[in-house]
Length: 249
Ligand code: ADP
Ligand code: MG
Ligand code: MG
Image (tube, rainbow, N blue to C red; front, side):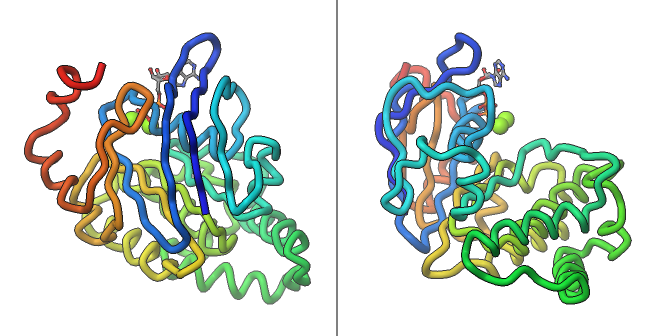
């Protein structure tokens, strides 16, 4: 589904990603861990096509398309979804309007009829209940005044409604208590499908007790320096990242 080869990317004039390789097959869950400032969010942002990042070398193949040739909107329409580490607030635009516009655009791109307002409201209420957000959050401005945990749950609800094929969750578990964490995990597990893949950026092995990844990668200094199975997350929790500096700079 996704094949990243020798990816180099910079912000302003700072090189952040320095030769990153990653291959993800349909249906797989890949966890990405690593020290702060390693480039994890940059990777997510580059995949989603967010402004401000320049790819200077390498390629990203997504379902046989050259992902880098598509703009952010086109990538979203083709199924790339990024749940931001720091979700943005859009005051004045209601969550419901925003979600409906996003879902309509994606359904049109997939040759599906947009939902009627009534059907969409029903669906959105169902999903908000699944992530434990009271229905009145649908009427509020997008993320406006939401707490950290509420923003994360809102991102998850968005993901459920958009039905992406590549889901990138950037520290969606940060700042969540254990109940909310389990809820996020359940949301992700319910969404796992043979034709949907996940990149889960997390600092905490405990999330991976609930979302069992197929692979765990360590991203450090702009590239993947180690990959393994779920046991790697346990080793990292125990040993930290101190070993990286000696072996990988
Ligand atoms: P991580 O998510 O792994 O903590 P990031 O991808 O957010 O790391 O950041 C990687 C590096 O890029 C850090 O050194 C960070 O300070 C820098 N960086 C991120 N965003 C910007 C930006 N908009 N402008 C300049 N530097 C940035
Ligand atoms: Mg970080
Ligand atoms: Mg980050």
